[in-house]
Length: 196
Image 1 (tube, rainbow, N blue to C red):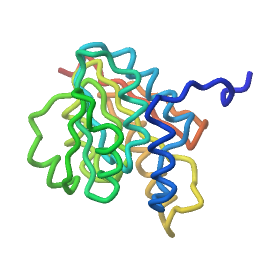
Image 2 (image 1 turned 90 degrees about the vertical axis):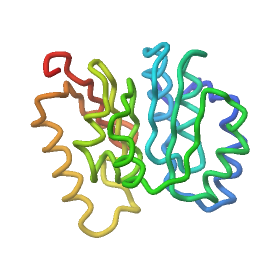
Image 3 (image 1 turned 120 degrees about the horizontal axis):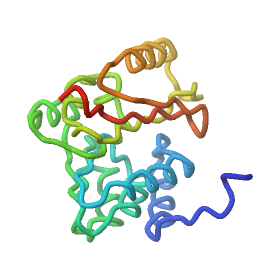
Image 4 (image 1 turned 90 degrees about the horizontal axis):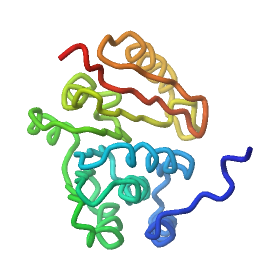
Protein backbone atom coordinates (compact mmCIF):
# COMPACT_ATOMS: atom_id res chain seq x y z
CA UNK A 1 0.00 0.00 0.00
CA UNK A 2 1.26 3.46 -0.90
CA UNK A 3 -0.46 6.03 1.30
CA UNK A 4 0.72 8.88 -0.94
CA UNK A 5 -1.21 7.68 -4.00
CA UNK A 6 -4.73 8.76 -4.94
CA UNK A 7 -5.16 11.39 -2.25
CA UNK A 8 -8.00 13.67 -3.31
CA UNK A 9 -6.91 17.20 -2.50
CA UNK A 10 -9.44 19.74 -1.22
CA UNK A 11 -10.68 21.92 -4.08
CA UNK A 12 -9.02 24.98 -2.52
CA UNK A 13 -5.68 23.28 -1.86
CA UNK A 14 -3.79 23.92 -5.11
CA UNK A 15 -4.58 27.64 -5.11
CA UNK A 16 -3.41 27.97 -1.50
CA UNK A 17 -0.29 25.92 -2.22
CA UNK A 18 0.68 28.16 -5.15
CA UNK A 19 0.29 31.29 -3.03
CA UNK A 20 2.14 29.60 -0.15
CA UNK A 21 5.17 28.89 -2.33
CA UNK A 22 5.23 32.51 -3.52
CA UNK A 23 4.93 33.79 0.06
CA UNK A 24 7.98 31.90 1.31
CA UNK A 25 6.01 30.20 4.10
CA UNK A 26 7.88 26.98 4.91
CA UNK A 27 6.02 25.55 7.91
CA UNK A 28 2.99 24.05 6.17
CA UNK A 29 1.68 20.63 7.18
CA UNK A 30 2.22 17.95 4.57
CA UNK A 31 -0.42 16.17 2.48
CA UNK A 32 -0.46 13.06 4.68
CA UNK A 33 -1.14 15.15 7.78
CA UNK A 34 -3.84 16.97 5.85
CA UNK A 35 -5.42 13.71 4.82
CA UNK A 36 -5.67 12.43 8.39
CA UNK A 37 -6.99 15.80 9.59
CA UNK A 38 -9.79 15.53 7.03
CA UNK A 39 -10.61 11.96 8.05
CA UNK A 40 -10.68 12.83 11.75
CA UNK A 41 -12.78 15.94 11.10
CA UNK A 42 -15.32 13.78 9.28
CA UNK A 43 -15.83 11.81 12.50
CA UNK A 44 -17.13 14.91 14.31
CA UNK A 45 -20.47 16.06 12.81
CA UNK A 46 -22.07 19.28 14.06
CA UNK A 47 -18.94 20.07 16.03
CA UNK A 48 -16.75 22.97 17.06
CA UNK A 49 -13.19 22.95 15.68
CA UNK A 50 -10.11 24.95 16.68
CA UNK A 51 -6.87 25.32 14.73
CA UNK A 52 -3.98 27.08 16.42
CA UNK A 53 -1.59 28.17 13.67
CA UNK A 54 -3.44 28.83 10.41
CA UNK A 55 -0.35 29.67 8.40
CA UNK A 56 -1.59 30.17 4.84
CA UNK A 57 -4.56 27.84 5.32
CA UNK A 58 -3.31 24.57 3.82
CA UNK A 59 -4.22 22.44 6.85
CA UNK A 60 -7.33 24.59 7.31
CA UNK A 61 -8.51 23.49 3.86
CA UNK A 62 -8.21 19.81 4.85
CA UNK A 63 -10.15 20.29 8.10
CA UNK A 64 -12.91 22.17 6.27
CA UNK A 65 -13.02 19.43 3.64
CA UNK A 66 -13.83 16.86 6.34
CA UNK A 67 -16.30 18.98 8.30
CA UNK A 68 -20.02 18.80 7.74
CA UNK A 69 -22.20 21.84 7.03
CA UNK A 70 -23.24 22.18 10.69
CA UNK A 71 -19.71 22.46 12.06
CA UNK A 72 -17.65 25.58 12.76
CA UNK A 73 -13.87 26.12 12.63
CA UNK A 74 -12.01 28.93 14.38
CA UNK A 75 -8.43 29.27 13.14
CA UNK A 76 -5.86 31.55 14.80
CA UNK A 77 -2.61 33.01 13.49
CA UNK A 78 -0.50 36.06 14.32
CA UNK A 79 0.80 36.75 10.79
CA UNK A 80 -1.62 38.85 8.76
CA UNK A 81 0.33 38.31 5.52
CA UNK A 82 -0.18 34.55 5.72
CA UNK A 83 -3.74 34.89 7.01
CA UNK A 84 -4.52 37.02 3.96
CA UNK A 85 -3.82 34.00 1.75
CA UNK A 86 -6.22 31.93 3.84
CA UNK A 87 -8.83 34.73 3.68
CA UNK A 88 -8.58 35.01 -0.11
CA UNK A 89 -8.81 31.26 -0.67
CA UNK A 90 -11.12 30.17 2.17
CA UNK A 91 -12.87 33.30 3.44
CA UNK A 92 -16.10 32.59 1.56
CA UNK A 93 -16.71 29.49 3.68
CA UNK A 94 -19.27 30.53 6.31
CA UNK A 95 -18.15 27.70 8.61
CA UNK A 96 -14.73 29.37 9.07
CA UNK A 97 -13.65 32.19 11.36
CA UNK A 98 -10.09 33.40 10.76
CA UNK A 99 -8.57 35.38 13.64
CA UNK A 100 -5.38 37.46 13.61
CA UNK A 101 -4.08 37.25 17.17
CA UNK A 102 -1.12 36.27 19.26
CA UNK A 103 -1.76 32.67 20.30
CA UNK A 104 -1.24 33.27 24.02
CA UNK A 105 -3.49 36.34 24.03
CA UNK A 106 -6.25 34.46 22.23
CA UNK A 107 -6.07 31.32 24.38
CA UNK A 108 -5.99 33.26 27.65
CA UNK A 109 -9.00 35.34 26.65
CA UNK A 110 -11.05 32.30 25.52
CA UNK A 111 -10.43 29.80 28.33
CA UNK A 112 -14.12 28.94 28.69
CA UNK A 113 -14.55 28.01 25.01
CA UNK A 114 -15.09 24.32 24.32
CA UNK A 115 -14.11 22.37 21.20
CA UNK A 116 -14.64 18.88 19.84
CA UNK A 117 -11.45 18.94 17.75
CA UNK A 118 -8.22 20.89 18.26
CA UNK A 119 -5.29 20.92 15.85
CA UNK A 120 -2.35 22.67 17.57
CA UNK A 121 0.06 23.51 14.77
CA UNK A 122 2.02 26.20 16.58
CA UNK A 123 3.69 26.66 19.96
CA UNK A 124 0.47 27.48 21.80
CA UNK A 125 -1.50 24.39 22.67
CA UNK A 126 1.60 22.31 22.13
CA UNK A 127 4.74 23.65 23.84
CA UNK A 128 3.00 26.57 25.55
CA UNK A 129 -0.37 26.69 27.38
CA UNK A 130 -0.88 22.95 26.88
CA UNK A 131 -3.07 22.55 29.99
CA UNK A 132 -5.19 25.55 29.08
CA UNK A 133 -5.81 24.31 25.54
CA UNK A 134 -6.53 20.73 26.59
CA UNK A 135 -9.04 22.11 29.12
CA UNK A 136 -10.89 23.56 26.11
CA UNK A 137 -11.34 20.06 24.66
CA UNK A 138 -14.72 18.45 25.24
CA UNK A 139 -14.90 14.85 26.53
CA UNK A 140 -14.47 12.60 23.51
CA UNK A 141 -12.82 15.48 21.63
CA UNK A 142 -9.80 14.92 19.39
CA UNK A 143 -6.42 16.66 19.89
CA UNK A 144 -3.85 16.52 17.05
CA UNK A 145 -0.27 17.75 16.79
CA UNK A 146 2.31 17.14 14.06
CA UNK A 147 6.05 17.67 13.47
CA UNK A 148 7.06 15.38 16.32
CA UNK A 149 9.75 13.65 14.25
CA UNK A 150 12.88 15.79 13.93
CA UNK A 151 12.53 18.31 11.10
CA UNK A 152 15.35 20.01 9.16
CA UNK A 153 14.13 23.44 10.29
CA UNK A 154 14.17 22.63 14.02
CA UNK A 155 16.27 25.13 15.99
CA UNK A 156 19.04 24.01 18.32
CA UNK A 157 17.57 22.30 21.40
CA UNK A 158 14.11 21.74 19.93
CA UNK A 159 14.53 17.96 19.99
CA UNK A 160 14.64 18.07 23.80
CA UNK A 161 11.46 20.20 23.89
CA UNK A 162 9.70 17.67 21.65
CA UNK A 163 10.85 14.76 23.82
CA UNK A 164 9.61 16.56 26.95
CA UNK A 165 6.24 17.24 25.32
CA UNK A 166 5.85 13.60 24.30
CA UNK A 167 6.69 12.51 27.85
CA UNK A 168 4.17 14.96 29.30
CA UNK A 169 1.42 13.76 26.95
CA UNK A 170 2.22 10.10 27.65
CA UNK A 171 1.71 10.72 31.36
CA UNK A 172 -1.57 12.63 31.20
CA UNK A 173 -4.54 10.85 32.73
CA UNK A 174 -7.12 12.78 30.70
CA UNK A 175 -6.00 11.67 27.21
CA UNK A 176 -6.02 8.38 25.36
CA UNK A 177 -3.33 8.86 22.75
CA UNK A 178 -1.45 7.28 19.89
CA UNK A 179 1.96 8.32 18.58
CA UNK A 180 2.43 7.86 14.85
CA UNK A 181 5.94 7.73 13.38
CA UNK A 182 4.35 8.60 10.05
CA UNK A 183 4.25 11.76 7.95
CA UNK A 184 6.10 14.33 10.10
CA UNK A 185 5.27 12.47 13.31
CA UNK A 186 1.78 12.87 14.70
CA UNK A 187 0.20 12.51 18.11
CA UNK A 188 -3.55 12.00 18.24
CA UNK A 189 -5.31 12.12 21.59
CA UNK A 190 -8.91 11.77 22.67
CA UNK A 191 -10.11 13.52 25.84
CA UNK A 192 -11.20 11.03 28.44
CA UNK A 193 -14.88 10.72 29.29
CA UNK A 194 -14.00 9.57 32.81
CA UNK A 195 -12.27 12.68 34.22
CA UNK A 196 -15.19 15.08 33.89
